[in-house]
Length: 293
Length: 138
Image (cartoon, rainbow over all chains, first blue to last red; front, side):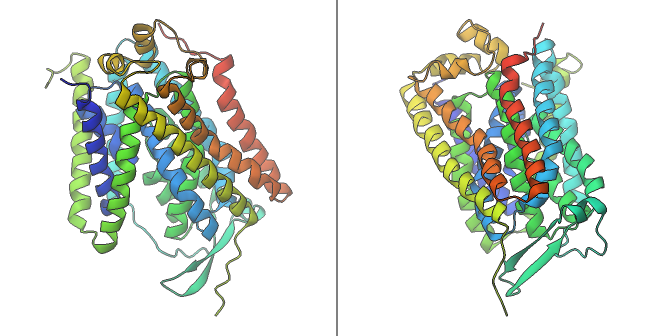
């Protein structure tokens, strides 16, 4: 097989992920790692490294725009990342240690990834979105840190003010999410957004934008773990980043015109299939079931 | 009705720094990255990378270059190669949030100065930790 076959496949594959991600509302980073693990010959170390850089690049590209508008809020992000920087680094270190210390490590990681995907699937299927949650009381931490902000909402033609709460409940949740993001190289919007929106009471636009801001810090911190272990290969990262960037631009334009629900269900079904395949691939590697291909 | 939005100065400082470094990082990552893939030559030959990318990161480097990776010298000492130059672009992207937090600290009140300084310290530890601590395998 010619050398350019797999990079080209990866480019086309990530281009498709980039197009369908905004239409389906499922993050590109969370699709890339499990699907690439299931269908491509790369070791999970390099897939997770590439997934992390992809999620970082996407978040870095959108965060400045949202921060200038007041949608991504550094006041909310700062106390959260103090906890999640630590756990995302721990996740990255543990993930690479497992594949390095155990001969069968990559199969353990693949199985764990499949199991995490089931959790993500359940969260995505059941979590609701509240456009403007009502925050009646504010906890002491949020009060002291003055966790509030405002932005101009064009659909209402007015400046919307908001405040958030429940920092004590949210911090452990973000710690867990940071760990998973670092360990598997996944984007973490699937968990950040429900915590910010449903637990902390941030309006949905603030939740999605601030989630991006959190991802920039968490993924950048974890990226150093992968860089220091040589788990970032340009031959995998470059086609992936270019593919998903071009795809996301096409997808964002298509999403403005139509976001048919069927696309979201198809993508979730593909994600579920990837979860099953990842678990099967891991079990086959350990010799518990016969290999598929 | 007023449409004046009071955006926190910390936010604005954060955004400006991140925007500039993201452009620089993306250009530095993608241009040499494409040159590397098209030319097929670099610190790690494209052919070697392809024939070994099913191995774990530690096994990959032992097989391809006969080295054990500890820290960042593997790309910093080989910047004349396109693949390592591309990694420098990734380094700029990975440092962008730290630089953005540092600039926003200047605009922060005392409470947030402390919080952001803790985040900065953690981030710096994340960067230098691999130079002091090395997780070994079997």
